Length: 418
Image (cartoon, rainbow, N blue to C red; front, top):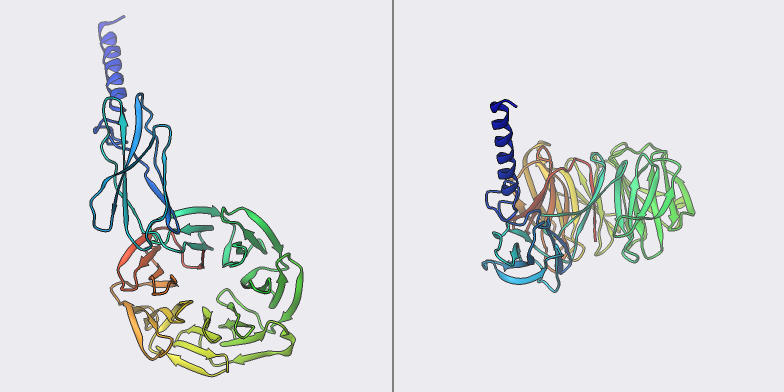
């Protein structure tokens, strides 16, 4: 063997040994761990959290130590878990309080650096998001910082949660079906439809669903999939059409920018005919009034409120309203809008007792906001809003302070609160 070849082999062996030494997860120079546990994530549900991280594959492990801070407090040693576990669970946390967590590995002879800190804010709800163009259903934490579950679907168009059974119903546009999902996203029910569902609503009390189909029909189904009635609309709806069920009046409200009108249809007897509220320019998303019945409708010239009596009132007519969301306790109407269609953006809400009075949450400093969902509570607990071009889902307090964000959300979203 030539001397040069032998020298090369020795250098390779030495370098290999040096590389292996640097893979020690406790080594601060380790490019993967930087000497601390990695992959730290939080899963939040109501007042409970589950903290997870990547294991340290090292001999002589003793335990993982959990550090926690709350509010503005500094991190302090809070708990520990055995060496063979990478999960820490905690309950009875305070709603809307920020909690900070970090993890440290402890061995018989040494300890790691403390991991990077992660933050969460527990709350009474999580948010389900159907993203039709990104093909997924996601569950988002109360503070909007963590995507806790995700599952791909062909064309998830619309969502509704059954308040009695906690079954999440999903409208699959191209699959021409409604899917009933449990909290783990397992399909527990399926209703096959004659055409693609544009939108649907459910009546948990009377155990029925109302589905708007692309074939111009509005159908009602029992939860087991048996059909109750089939009503022909007489016009072709499109993907901008939406419907809601008004539990107070027992009515289905339907928006259509094809005929620039909103329809009110009796859920018990659709053949009695529809009340048509016409001359509504480009009606879009709409929400039932949970206080006195009726409906709120977003349009290109403001928000129209149609009372149960049929009286119509207009608000914020200087704005092109992109989406609305109604606070279930107060009845306040939250909105995203812009002047001249896509400039000078505004996000705020109309107070239920006096809709002429409005409160601005976000001005033009946070622009391109479309889909909106208010988070309910005795007092408002803020909003989620989807931002175009950045394709982020942003979480704000009722005062407009951002508390969380997630990437990879497209322009056609539907929300359901758990």
